[in-house]
Image 1: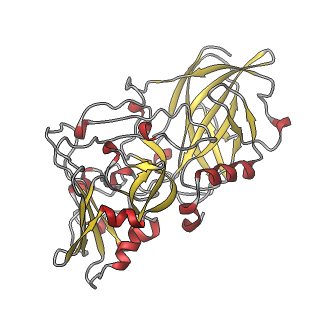
Image 2: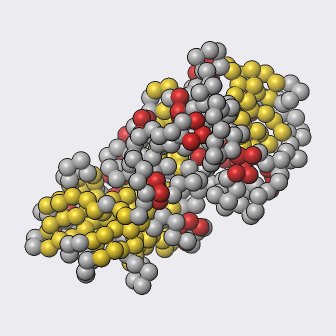
Image 3: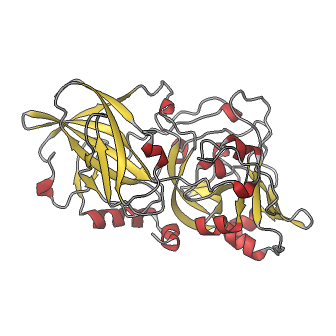
Length: 395
């Protein structure tokens, strides 16, 4: 999907496009009512069935979901993906994931400004400047590079953003010939010391990376000003990139050149963003973009006629090319089979899929996805990163 179209896609337009493209049928399943991607009602294998509930995933830690935990660098909120539906793909602001909570020292009640430009000729960009130019920028997904099964893969969310394209600010700045990169920094001083994270929220991008990704300074999400833990008063959003590059509490944007060293945050997240080692220079750091990825978010249990059947519901996101065929398997000794109901209309935010499943016997099953077509880079899928396990007792 061309970026210009994607950036303007509203929540209503996104849902309408999904329905029209897939010939969807709305089926009731309590709070899980959602459109199935089927060509006609006659081909829905769950028609007339009774929903019995959902089978939980096992071996994924005990972290409570949709709940703010800890403080400052140790702060977390894991989004509960199990209730997602295509009728409302947006994550409510209070449930949008948090990887680091705001510093106790942060005070954005006073006048906030961003130091902008070169070291030699900086200017101050005020919140009033940004708010004057703020515009709707559409639905975009964000995922933490450290999103793992210990938190039920809950460090991933979608919001409807508003802000100012960074390209507009860069075009207005007088960029010298030697300024080839942009350092975006955020307030990152804390009252307590972290045992798991390194202070220093900053990332260096090439000018081309910021423009082609459609990066923007966000001041609003889901129609309201940003909340404190989600980057208020202003944060960077880089569509298609991991959240570690989407700097919160932005207070400085500096023009630098190709000799700039990778920041401490870039070094900390080098392995999780698939770098070759830990690059010393920012220019040697590969873009922290998300490969195409997919995973199940719930397994529904149904009674259809006299038989127990299961419907696996999942999401697909990341990458830059549309997926034509998605495969699924339920244990390593089994072959991949095509996902039943699947249609992707864009790489950002997420797309939904479903698969009808009738396990032959009780036991544990490991659910894994792969992109069948086209042949594209899927490093996390290749190693089973998003594999999820269920315990089936009734067949």
